[in-house]
Image 1: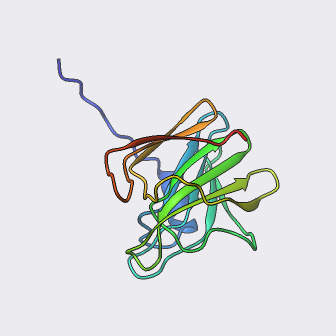
Image 2: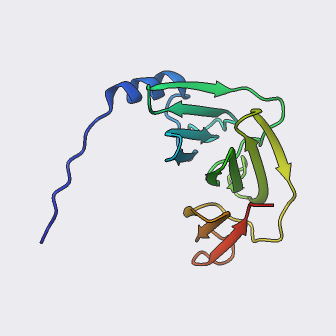
Length: 158
């Protein structure tokens, strides 16, 4: 049996994103909180400029905002991200020079709207292929700088 899927364009959300995000943004990190019905978007590039902006998109009412902070990750793309409880976690990245990969770990408190650099981890440097949340951990599939097909569990509950 072959299932047929149909796509529905969300015009209000599309207009919102086009008005809020930098034009031609690619390689950003976007994470959906199914419980609270919002999306957090961080970073990305347009091919020549790297961005260090953070956005919240509220799907219930098709509104959004840029979160302005003085401390934040700098100019990175292709990070792994999850939302857990009241925080957005960001791990690993491709740095602005386009050739170095990082193993930095950041937390954005979604209540206070403040970024904190959590320590560098001993985990491999990576960009992100696929990430998902499992209990209080970020489950990372692939993207490791030296082993593209690995699977790692990163506990964020401490």
